Image 1 (cartoon, rainbow, N blue to C red):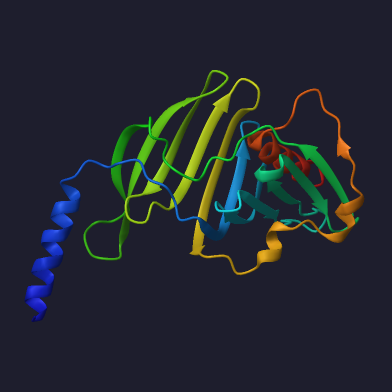
Image 2 (cartoon, one colour; image 1 turned 45 degrees about the horizontal axis):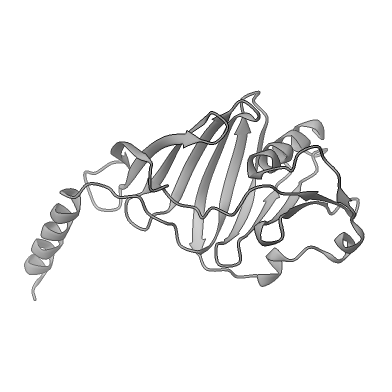
Length: 220
């Protein structure tokens, strides 16, 4: 097939995809990437995330942005209903209950489509990426909006609000498929002595992310 034929086939394929309504999707099960977390009171942190939907595990590490800021390392084990806050500078570890069931990075089946746009430009191949914005409700009188790529179902942003946690926005980038380091999902040796902290109510994933942002702010 000559180049003209290839381009014609590609144009027909893109036209067929564009003619279909976006459908809720599930992200790849193993990924590593970068993220930023921001809360309503302008607390912000940035770092990396390792994601394992098969083992129901997430590892988030923040990066210190100033000389006196200490990074925070969180390991969230949905399969064991606990999460760890790890401080490598002090070799300390906090272990807390986690109330959430694991929910894969996905567009929920009951999400409503807000719109579909190109981030960047659609003028030429490679200048932009086609994304879908979805919205819906969360338990506890909450709401959310989320953005996923149309091709590959790669997560980009997630913004949520609940009366308990307020606004939290998580932005992700530089995703790479696969898991390069299985040890990402095992707590370090000094966490073996960490006692499970008693709390009035178990923490959930949003509490863990907000705790991460707040801790970075307090250590600036």
